[in-house]
View 1 (tube, one colour):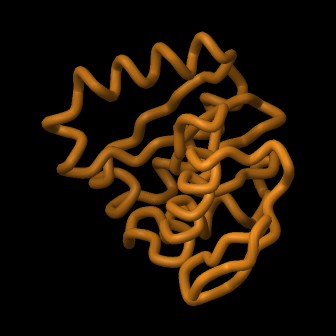
View 2 (cartoon, rainbow, N blue to C red):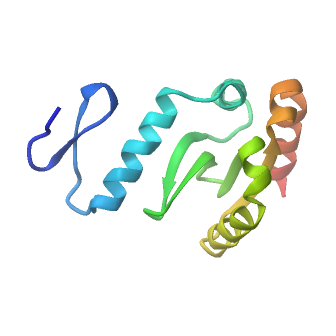
View 3 (cartoon, helix red, strand yellow):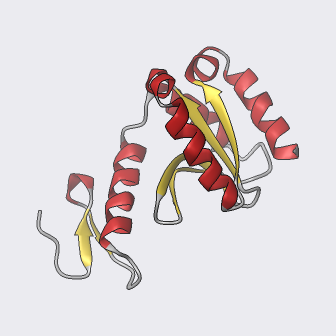
Length: 136
């Protein structure tokens, strides 16, 4: 689907209005984040069920765009906490992930990385780690 000027077509043909400050890069990131929200991994879906109930006292967003540069798995804006789920893909990205974490930290965010095996196998344990991170 081709969108009219000032609009972009998201996944499934949904047309969204652009804000005037949106660049091509931020539009691309918004489209990717939307696609990732529509088709989450199993572990993202499990953790979202834990985070979306607001039982932790803060609101979380999933697949959030930060600084027109990064898409993070989960973000608690009020706590400036990012929660990332690290699956097999991240085993070969340790250096890149560390560099990304430093950049996000310079923007004032704290990053909690949870192994996908913990989220998938022990969502209660993952929640406990997030509670500790929120307090810290």
